Length: 288
Image (tube, rainbow, N blue to C red; front, side, top):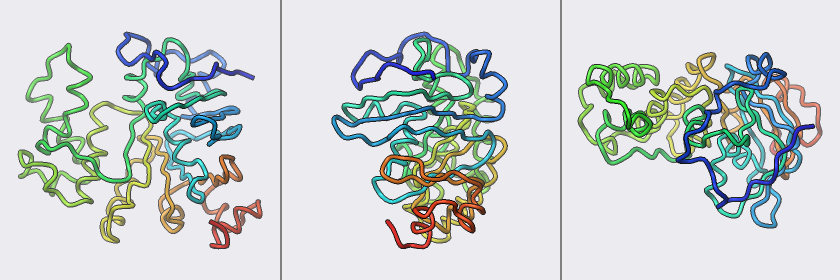
């Protein structure tokens, strides 16, 4: 079994260090597997101070599909999601043990740059968080931050913006308002914009923490449709409390309880023929 030393929040990281990205060369034993699984964890445990939020989590998340993380509040699903790009380390006294491989690379290797990791593994939060600048500059923001040493031409910028907005089905709605403040968009449009902001960085994995929780029914439907269009191009991992959404929008589901993985299966199988009693009780509304 592979393992890593505990990682404690506040310890030196690679934020500003020139280091190999997570997309660098994977170990020879994992190169072939990286084509099948975007994320693999082995015996991952995580503590916030003395509280253990994850307990020996071992999972394989397939490439190019939408995987849902479900379970009652406090079960560890958001903590697990945030572990995949190490953003947990921003949230306090965090200790992690075990191994997390993204695209075949151990994300705790010394040569992994957090900046490059988070380019490859983007994050979308519960509430839309557009910057108080134009729609155009929101889309370009991440790319400009990561491209300080090279100039991006106006033509290149225009192409990045249009392509990203087309991909999230937002172009037609905002193409005549690109210079307007992004905060003037509807919540549904803002959330699509936040996803579009990731795309010029060419992520391989997109993490979504309850991306529809702030939206009305119409907005949920439109964002779910857009998320569905991302499959195959990207690996999407989505946390949701909405069981109907999990059934509609995901290909596989992982049910978590008290920091542990209870069941991981095709979504249809998990909902129609769960193998674990705890899973059955949860999806029937008898638990959580």
